[in-house]
Each structure stands twice: as structure tokens, then as C-alpha cells.
Image 1 (cartoon, rainbow, N blue to C red):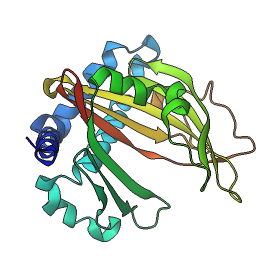
Image 2: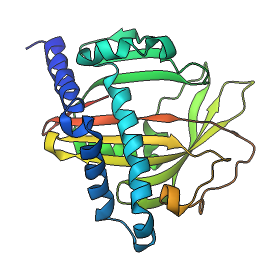
Image 3: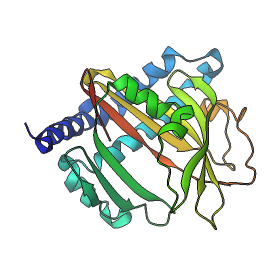
Image 4: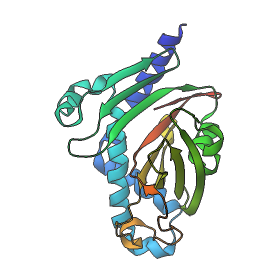
Amino acid sequence: MGGKHLISEYRSRLDKTLASNDLANEGTLKTLVKNQIQLSAESEIEDYIDNIVEKRTKEVSNIIQMLKSVSENDNNASRTKETSHGSWKLKQDTDEFRVMYREGPEGTPFHMLLVEGYVDGPVDVCLCISWEAILYKKWWPRTTIPTFKITCSECLKKVRHGEQICLVRMKVSWPLSAREAVVHFFGFEYFQEDLIVVLFNSISDSESIDVSTHGFTRDGIPDVQDVVRIDVVGGFAIQKVSADRSYFR
């Protein structure tokens, strides 16, 4: 069986999973998110659990919509959004992966990049590599021209199971100064279809953060010094293909 046929099968299965009723229905998705948070919730957030679940559900729904925006079955719906976002442009397409780009929402400074393909490794190993910030310096690409490399990557705090806050700092080409992002990671598990979705959202210096609204505080998050702190919104999905192969987007 050819590589193109295989990757099309993997892609179609992920598309089907992302479009499933459990993930498309707001009420069902909220129940799944709430059940997961309650498994490791501390007593300090019990009074605010509904607020936190509401916020996380919206974030999970947002990343699912982003991941679905390149689905063949979602093309018609996506066309209605192309005016504000711009259409996806295919940059590279091989038997193992594809890369796409489009402009971010109108009026924002964002650019949108998407890569999807398969990895010869089990889901837990793939998740560990992509989730553990301390490993980023080992596998993120480094380039000399133009300059790019990760100079610092660390976990600032473990919020609870499947949730953490990390700092990633990078060196970029002169005359730009170093950049860094403080990112909140949240992992959503949908084991019925062997799927894990990890969403990440940067934490702004000006954002008001409290246990009652976010489920955590600013404790452990350093003030910005001698770098430019940037915003990041996104995430990724990993789905099991077999015991030793995974598909990601």
C-alpha cells in the first residue's frame, strides 16, 4: 500500500474523529472536560469548577475548530471563514507529512501554520516529547541563517494532571531581540478514539489571572526581563494508528 494512500487513511480517520458528535456537541464536550478536570481537581478550585470548565471547554472547542479547518469534510464550512482568515495555502506535501499556511484573523498580528503527518512511535512517546518543555532544546530545529534556536525551555509549574505552565525562550536574527513565551498547556483526552488534544495559550503580562477564573495564579511566573514576550495560540492532536505509529496535526 503506497505512502499517499496510507497518510490519506490516517488523515480521514482524524477528520472523522474531530467531527464526531461527542466533540461537536457543546454539552457533551463540556461534560468530558469537566470529568477530566474533576479527576485531579484540588479543593481550592471546587467553588470555581464551573467557571474553569466553561473556560477550558471554549478553549478545547476552539482548537478542535482550528484542527478541523483543513478537513476535507469541513471545506464548505471553512470557505465561509476565508474572508476573515484567508484560505489555507499548501506549502509542502509528501508521503509522510504536509505543511500549510494562512494569514491569521483580520486585525490580529497572528500567522497560522499547520503541519500534519505520521510518526513511527507510540502515542505516549510522542506526547512526552512534545509536552515536556525541558526537551525542546534537544529536538527543536536550529538554524544559523536566519538565526533561530531555543535558548531556554522549562516547566514553571504543574497546575494539575494534564495541565502545566512553561516558559520557552528563543534567539532570533539580528536586529530582533530575543523572544519568549509563557504558555499554558492543557491536555484533553478522548480515548474512545485513541485521541489526545493538547492546547496551548500564552499568558499575557497584562492579563488578570486568578484561581476563580483560570484555575491557577501567577505564582511562579517571572516578570519579563530583557526579552520580548510574544503571544501564541494553538495546539495539536495526536491519534494512535498502531502500537508503534501515531498521526499528528
